[in-house]
Image (spheres, rainbow, N blue to C red):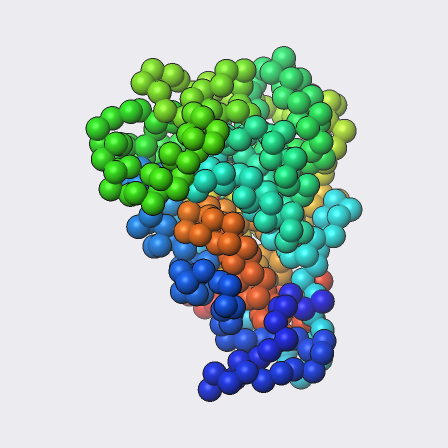
Length: 420
Ligand SMILES: Cc1cc2nc3c(=O)[nH]c(=O)nc-3n(C[C@H](O)[C@H](O)[C@H](O)COP(=O)(O)O)c2cc1C
């Protein structure tokens, strides 16, 4: 059914016209309700959250979340790739009842997008991992908990039944066995293995902005806290008061504190991780197995040969290899090589039209990262719900405008490459 819940349509003159029941609504912008926090009334699209979050978050944290690696070439390319396609809409099609539901691994979700895994989610806003898990559950969309998160994977699953778990998997058999067992015991049915992080990326912006993992207690960091009081009281001190010092909870055998003068984050021989280890995971993990971070069709073929259930075509939001191709550009060839695997993508998805383009080019589902972290920084749970609503409304409106009544009707026939 149409994803737009309101039964009132604002006209171009701002009047409210009651609609016949069951009619779909394509408003030009979401109508703010009386309960919408004031700041959210100005958030009209996912991109609106980022400049607002830049004011709220200390520089090291905002830079860590917003940035890419080295020259940001892949970060830019991710957005540009969407602009290379234009729609050829169909007209006079009855689109009065629209559906954006998507069935993935046997479960029907209410939208064709979910939350990508992000390590700094609970640094951006109080209890970020649990907030995203809760909003995902009430919105009936998937949320992928990051292996680099600061919340125990068991605690997130307890509040987020639609959560999947993403592992940063060490190239070491004993550690793999322990992690797979723990994830299964917590009740997760989908395990995402991130494959594009053999070594840490060269994120110069982190060095310039004073971000590190763990954070080093410096005068500069203290000054950033003092000059961002909303974050200091609303996120940092509240977290310390409610949960104590956060630790990386789901990576390796040692819990590394968020702030430390000396601690070092364990990378656990990730550069040894290879298909051999994936085969071991497949033999141990009875649930759905997804590989995230593929960009090459041949790798998709190898994944299929290893019994993988799905791939997320991704360049990590432009945060790993600078110059790595934008996922949208390789989607068609990966979809063609994927066999029976489910093909998903992320990196740069910001608009309903982006979602439709990705679906048309071979994705069955997309994930979105940064905007939801920023939405939580701006207005907590209400912010994340608002962001979900914005994207759902865009998809709903765009389906009508391209002339199809469901995401199942989206195909390459709707697209033309933009002339260069
Ligand atoms: C702050 C931040 C932290 C991230 N942490 C992880 C992570 O722990 N594991 C992972 O697989 N991907 C991680 N990613 C990458 C995202 O899962 C996703 O691929 C990317 O954000 C999608 O691009 P978008 O932000 O343009 O939507 C992170 C991204 C951001 C922005």
